[in-house]
Length: 274
Image (cartoon, rainbow, N blue to C red):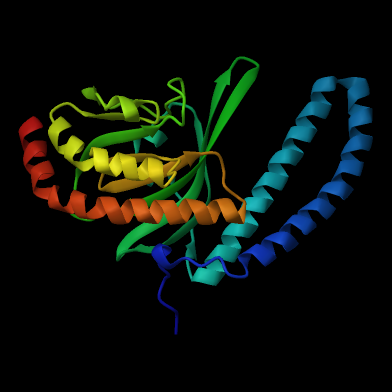
């Protein structure tokens, strides 16, 4: 009989760290043997073209990166009875995924959070500019809120810089909500015009202080029936992943009751502004 799919709020990392050490050792051994091969091949290709050698080294780095993430996801799935699944870009609702560049998802895990469907995965998009390109990787936690339709809202994490890049597409009729001075250097808040009061009730001063105190170094996006928590960069280290889930879970637990109370307000406003 198939076990019930696991819950992200109870996710366990027991024994995963030990497996991670084994994975890293395997990757290091692969790296040593492949490096020898690349060194020989690069010498030959460099004689023909420097670019050829660069491409091979880049592909090798990407290969090691993918293997590390895949093994970690497989170990987490087995330990917590989570389902491994390829995430279809077309099924994602957040504006983070609405960019006109090459997009990719990798290593999806499916489970539940507080009886709601939830998914954890890696995402990236690549901006091409002539001969150069830049890839932006992300670690994403997605929770489905069935029956609720959120107005697009983004609490953008800035770190400690006003110049941190904002990712994803801007929403139609978007406005920026003015935060208190003590919060501005950490976050910027955006939502659709007409929802400002409700969103300020949701992302209130107490909640933002909580995020800063708990060092929740991620952005939060509401879109349609989804809540997204994401951070720039692909998290593959166990201690960082544990920290991500601990802070993300605290955030959802703090935010979910407020969102539920505002459900009726969101629905009324949606009919009005549509």
